[in-house]
Length: 512
Ligand code: ADP
Image 1 (cartoon, protein in one colour):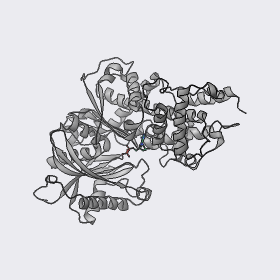
Image 2 (cartoon, protein in one colour):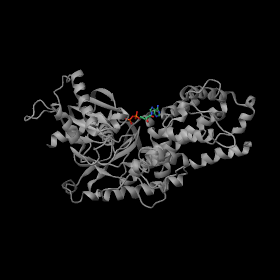
Image 3 (cartoon, helix red, strand yellow):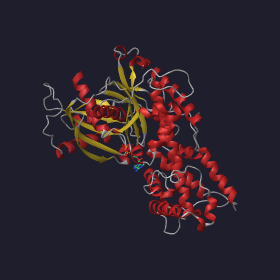
């Protein structure tokens, strides 16, 4: 059997394999900057650095009424957005489930479903009092729609772009290589609907635009939800692959969708563990989206599940749950990232400032050999954690020990902490790329010196995961220093995809 020190060594080893020291964060950022510049120079790179053809950011005075359709995450949304021109908006929306059959079937069936959903929305939500969507004289009864499509697309204009690849569990056939706006417009036309898709926007671009509209300015839009990605305002002169495009000749600025989820797909720098490798191998896109697979909501639960199973299966003696599992724990994707959140919240019990609650080290398991010597507040915390685990993973009552609870809590915080530190690397890279910061250890001074650096964010992880933003900021301090980190104002891009699509549709209608 395992002697106690042996068991402790296994936990310490797993713990070490998930650590990212400040030096490692700085090195990753250097690599990230290199990939940014490769992506800005040419097409076909994993870090795609996609020009959005959006050439300015809103200031809050924009007005109009538009439809928005959002496809790219767990739900699909249709909404009507009214921009009031005073940094406020009104939004009415309906969510529609996208089944796995639709995600992985024929593209035309998926796009017909999207069109049907818009049709259903228009029937159940007749247009607001506000005049609908700047109808043009040629097409007085046409409703203008902005499409938020959160997959890699090679955009060639505000209203066209070729699908490069699917991510996040989608794999619909006969879509890759086609213009996504045309696929949608054809579906509207097949149904003789008076809806025109005038703008195509990534959710990160939408987050940036909507945050700029409500906050009066924004530099970076970032998503930490089902997936992760970011878009930022770049000087057109730096987007060297646009050199022969009319948009390149006009100069000025343009929002670039980085597709940073694909950072370091070769995994030469990312700290991959066997748990990450197992996830990747069984995913529908092995070797792709390496960064995203260590960061986002779709994947963190699975990394954690792999860690827990390795402990259940430890030989010669199980180190968790007395060697027992449950259907949820056995199933791929059976542990949702929201369960990790719940475990950490149960541990903290609302006392987020408590040093004990923020303990990041591997659990010292010997304390469980003498349960009557355990600290009473720790027992209270672990009892709450145990209740969450028992319920969420479906264990019979009485099976999960306090030691098990401590181990699961540790595994969740370890996996989430690594995710938040890596997220800080992505944000720091944008600050350096845009001349707002200098990479720690490098010579030089930042060209831009603004009192506030606006970052618009969206996604359940950054909104709900305990301490995600705080840990992201810890990473940012390592990468660009505390002075810059302090100026970063992270704010929710509320309804970013809907409002962003509306703002983009407005720009498209103005330009046409
Ligand atoms: P999307 O990115 O699809 O628009 P969300 O931002 O809500 O939507 O992200 C959904 C992802 O967030 C899912 O992978 C889910 O596991 C995860 N998630 C949901 N609730 C929470 C939570 N409270 N804490 C952490 N992650 C969560």
